[in-house]
Amino acid sequence: MGDRRPVRLMGVINLSRESFYQGSVAGPEEALSLARAMQEQGADIIDVGAVSTAPGSPAISEELERRRLFPALGDILDSLDITVSVDTQRPAIAADALSRGAHCINDVSGLCRPQMASTVAEHEGSLIIMASRKRAGDLLCLEEIIPLLGERMREAETAGVSPERIILDPGIGRWIPEKTAAHDLAILDGFKRLRCLGRPVVAALSRKTFIGECLHQPDPFQRLQGSLAATAIAVYLGAHIVRTHDVAASRETVALAEDGDLEVEVLDRLGGREDLAQILSRTAVDERGFGALSRKGSFCLLSLRGLSSMEAIIIKQEMLVRGGDAAVPKLALRCDPHPEEVIIMRSVHQIAGLVRNLASQPFRLSRLARLIDEALDRIDSPERYRWE
View (cartoon, rainbow, N blue to C red):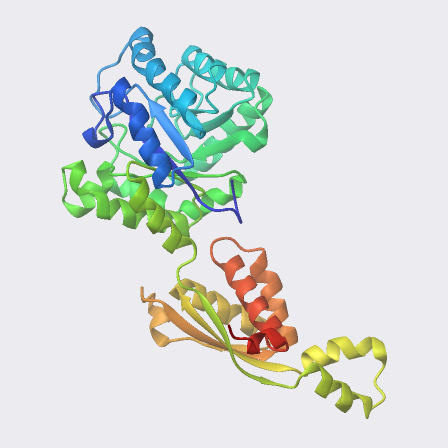
């Protein structure tokens, strides 16, 4: 998982009756059927936890966590072919879970117990590290979250966890009473900054308190639409994993946020390669210069449809840098939320430079690069005239 790979969906199963969202709570006997349903709906990972971290939830013993967790975990591991993550802060629980076949430990305490990283390393598991300093979800701003996650990541690597197995979570949610919706919105707004850490990032937003406060919905059952909106924002800003109670709805939201309805059409082209060969031959141009000159002498007018305002502005800037231009709707400059059409115009050489740059970019820009490349390839292909 990571850049240029599909966003993964992590379905949440809570075995703790104290969970803030009762719709996700399952007993040991219901957990398997819920996990199977999530897998059928498109979940790539099942995250199972037996301890609630909602504000005011009572602490439970390790023995009670074991009684809640392991019967359900065993059923899921025995019956389903799916990646399973265990949400626990206890290294002893993590060790038993990994030895029984779990693939990942989701530690919301952010390695507050130093043995956790070495335990995961010993079992060659994956590790989700949430930004926490002294307790799960303590009050941190993004300027503190980024260096803290970097520090915890290095601690995990020093303990033997493979860097490729480390996943990061900025810790959105009202884990403590002092945390407000404004804190979580600031983290969501800066989600793209987490890319500097170079590891996959989890967006754990589903039905959380900040959504309820923004929408005046104290009941978590009424927060689905807000959760999906926040999910779309997080995916657009670079989230690699979406942790959700609502797999089917989130799958559609992720698909739209990842790709949308991008379309590329060649509206006009002036100067084909063979035409230019004849023209350039009249000047006895050097053969080595022919390739570059033929691209520079071939001009295209392309329509790019379905872009967001941000993508439209990026395309215009990229074309201007290359000496070309792009016609962008004026509303895009005001961050209009509706899909935009952009017309780009310049030589094939300059458009090829645009494609090369977009191909290394995150989000939908790399896909747009492929679509432009494919559209240009089709211009001279006889396949464009085929019909069934």
